[in-house]
Image 1 (cartoon, rainbow, N blue to C red):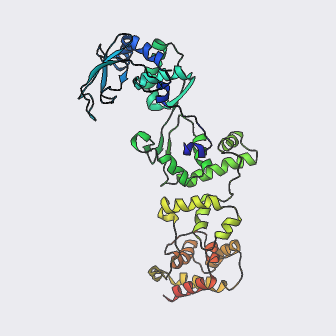
Image 2: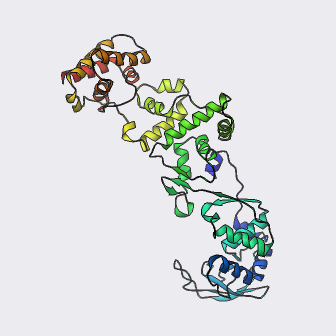
Image 3: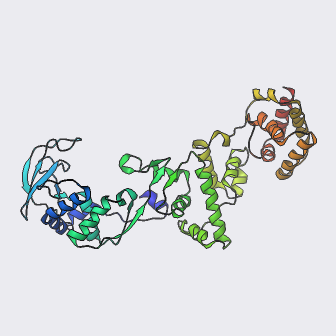
Amino acid sequence: MEVFNKIGCYPEILWSTDLYKSGKMNPLIKECLDKASEIRKIYEELYKKKIRETWYPFQPYCLNCGKVSTTKVYNWDGEKISFACEVNSVPWTKGCGFKGEMSPFSNEKEIAGKLPWKVEWAAKWKVLGVTVEGAGEDHMSRGGSHDLASLICERIINYPVPYALPYAFFLIGGRKMSSSKGRGSSASEMLEILPPELLRFLMVKTKISQQINFDPSADTIPKLFDEYQKVADAYFSKGNKDLARIFELSQIDKIKKPPSIRFSALVQLVQMPNKKEEIKKEGFEEWARYAKIWIEKYAPESEKFLLQQSLPESVKNLSDKQKEYLRKVSLELNKSWKPEDFQVNLFEWAKELKLSSKDAFSAIYIPLLNKSYGPKAGWIILSLDKEFVKKRFLDAVKS
């Protein structure tokens, strides 16, 4: 429920136990027991296998041990069922061997038993007045659960089959999200790595017939942020109406304009020293938190960088031209620069020394990050203490 509420959905939960205890299921239980032979024929027709003639579509709670998965009904006289709690009917537990009679009808004090879930699905449609039903594509496949429930509606309980909405699987790193298999927590975990409106956007933008494979360890998250900014631009610029509508439907309470910075740039910015005030001033704080989480948990090594506390051994591999370039950059740091102007000049100084851009920038990154690549060099250099950078570059020249 918490996940639903955070993305602006407030469903009403109806519990099966309450439906049975309310007595609303009792007329359907009687109808299904009265027409057990017809239901058996539906099972045989759909699944192409013989059902025993003493099979009834009901599982009571054993009057002796309270188990339901081990019980089998073998007679119905119109008022009471005769059942046995079979010792070896299922592999995961043992029945107690009790045999007895009981009413199949529940009341507010206790639940007597339940219909098999595929029959129960149809019965719930009638009890609740369902007109549209969504379910996973596995249940909606030919010969699946939905087909059986539909036949129960048509032939047994006389209720129009709800309009079917089959939806594809939501995969987390290639695995089906499933609470029954212990993977339901993935939904709440997703809200730790995505803003609520982006999780909602992920679902709104995807057709229900299309499978979602959310893999945080790949480039899924950066791309999702970029796509979200695209639909936001369409909304605020009154551009493509379909994209604008997707953005509108992705909002939780009120329309909120996202930060203008690209996620990939923000990933670099949050790793630079002395940028907290700039991030706060520009209104990037919320997205910056998610960028940090992505870096810490999912980003590939190519996206991570860390300022080295001492001169890396790898500076010994710098060429004479690269060292000359570092000496030039060190001298220029005595002047006052804007990051964008400094970035342009980094390219110009490399040209003057007939040094390729790749070699020039790796000369900058290696002493600082111990990598041959990194974020925009002009920005990271000017975000650091100038004297520190000058000393680091000159130490690299001397190595």
